[in-house]
Amino acid sequence: MNKCVLLLAVLCSALSHADQVTLRADVWFPMNGEPGSANPGYMIEVADKAFAAAGHSIDYANMPWERAVAEVRAGKIDCAVGAYKEDAPDFVYGDQHLGLDTQAFFVKKGTPFRYTGNLEDLRNVSIGIIGGYSYGEDFDEFIKQPGLSVQSISADNALEQNIKKLLAGRIVTTLDSVPVVRAKIKEMGVQDQIVMAGQFGEPTPMYIACSPAKPTSKQYVAILDKGIRDLRASGELKKILDKYGLEDWQ
Image 1 (cartoon, rainbow, N blue to C red):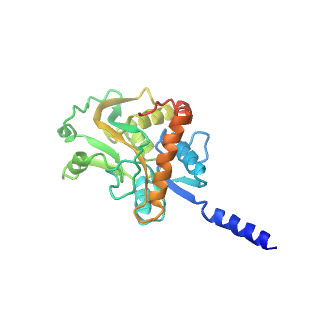
Image 2 (image 1 turned 45 degrees about the vertical axis):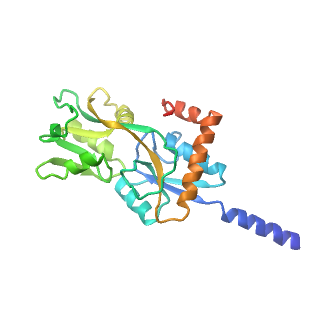
């Protein structure tokens, strides 16, 4: 009888340490996509394997990026997927990033606008952006100026809405991740109608960033760091990235 009680206590203790880690972001494929799909995004697959190796599971769902950042900051959600440090400098970050993102301006084919590296190029064009994202300190400050035409969308399909606005002529350009835009316009079947109009800035590290309000966050980013290193060493990371047509960032 005592052995049964002891065994039950051990099992309960083990279960109590098996966390369900909540991850949230808007759809930003190939980094993160539709929950439960065959291709949920390479960051989600990496996180799933990293946390599983530590005895935890993940709960991944989509929501507008602005809301995801707010809820992670408040401690309602554990981590945000695909964050730049500029997005949320107060969040908890690991040592291992999950890729380098390159941003660029995109326009409808035939549109003369091109970004030459000078923010003044944007003075007389309408720009579509995603609410809650940081596009770098200089850009973020520039678009606060009065008289600029900046349209911000907060939705979990914000990029798709911006692409539709490009095609409809409601905005001149949108700024977003190059691999994400290319994946989205291919999915929408409009890859022949949208073209890149100039790279913006330098490649930026991306992270799964965790809540500054939760004591578990340092543990979670340490698990992710170890998971990324282990997956790289075993060759499993390459298999995941191959699935999405990507290469290791290191």
